Image (tube, rainbow, N blue to C red; front, side):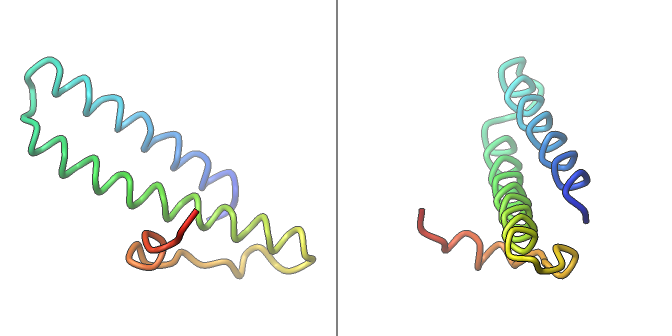
Length: 81
């Protein structure tokens, strides 16, 4: 995935997040469904942001950004800020 594709995916997931919150507010889904789906979205978002940061770092240091690879959510979720 290139940078533009990653950013488009992030935008789509943020839109999904808004739709989920609207669906909960309108009673179309229950809190458990919203919570499960939001958790999944958050993990996927974290992976996308991590991949984007990897690509940018590789570019900054003269490496090939296409060599960046998505890391498992278990690894990305363990990072400290």
